[in-house]
Image (spheres, rainbow, N blue to C red):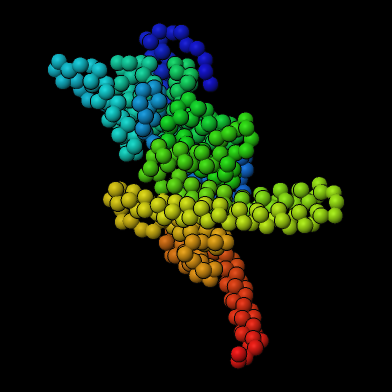
Length: 426
């Protein structure tokens, strides 16, 4: 996406104006879509079947994927701007008598980011253009404009601005980040993932890009990368980094819980597969005994690992719910239950062979309660969509409960028979 530009600042400003005028004429004929074609995710990663970026990433909780975040400093400021330094009304704050122009530029840049984060896209563009009017190569202002154009559905405007950003600053992380969303819009999903990975390569402290990769890798069930060439490009790394950089990110926290749940399940399944592979390659009379010993060792070892990961998953889901409610209160909305977290807690309590402080039956009853609560808390469309899934999961849980009760009855009968068989008297 990089190319060298050697024109002067004045010539670059003229290019920006020309691009804005040409694109404006084209966009007036055809209405552009406002969001990339990224389907909403179903709650939980249990039923997700994407693998390694083959499909567009989905954010847990049914949130539609959108470029987010306006944090950052220097050339990596969030936002998006191109459209021209001198195109029409500027809209920036006027300089006070004797005020340093750098102070005015800084004030307008901060106001542009605020407007972008608040959804006032036209104002964000106007403020960013006021910065470009005095600093034609200001990449953070261009980023604000590009971001705002994408949010408004002016995809070709956004694309043109990203071309200027790439020419001026080929290593700009936000340029790669927004290029990823354009690739998603164009249906080029693998290319999008590569752009997001490039964004965190250029800026390892870019929470929005890490959050996007967290959703992507979680959807693909790439819990922890084993390929030495791709170490760190996995759900655990991405989600941990996203949560570390932005502790209030309830979506990444929810995905981190699903990662823990996936790592717990992989321990037993992966260990048993290893035992089976050894059994196939075994030659001799003790193969079956070796397999039994290997399998027993895996179950004993994974029991400790599962307890640790399942406990971490539960804490992450509960924390995600708290963060969601806090975000609702901050936005002046009535905080309700975080429905995706309820669904994932139900699946967790259903899947976990062992949950600290719970018997098997109490654990399964909690799973049913969380799933029922999910249907009550979810919006009507999601509740209708997932009603059959929840019903099927509940039937499975009931079968598990009946099987566990049968085991308990058998154990009690065996103990009773053993007591009756003891010799009476001294």
